[in-house]
Image (cartoon, rainbow, N blue to C red; front, side, top):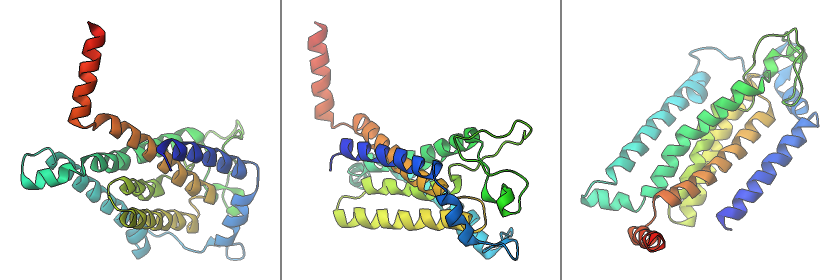
Length: 244
């Protein structure tokens, strides 16, 4: 499947999934499974410095940051004229995509979170909070001045950014393995936040699809930036001839 087809399908899926959740009560139906109304508490009770917090929140965020720095180092090293640098040169384009994705995807999702003004489940009256349930396209009552930053899922964006590893590896087997691994990491982060009442299902699904869409765009951008030297020289000659 070509990148253009993947891009088109991803955009369509992103729009379709957004509308599905926006015009249905699927989020509430799923989230109710994680909330004990009798005890008025979530399946998992979030506690700072707990083992779960270290594994699925703080720890995994630190691990992804360290991984991103390692990718950046390898990308820079790929420009070095040495045996190892020459080997990494073959992966330069993929390294650039992964490094860029690990920065741009969380930043993009974070920007969306800051503008959608959508409450988390734990904020809503339905789950013992103080505020009304609000979907993305709905307006918050004017008397409520508090700004919410819960849509889409920012925490899981770091995990789903690892989908970009698909473009780093060469064989189909390794590509599929990395996608599977990235989905496990992304969903483990997303489900953790759902289980403690911080996100609805739609928040995580939208983040996953948006992350893949951004990754495809980065692949196109990287293809333009990392053209083979012969191709770049040919383009310069064509441009020179046109200018004469």
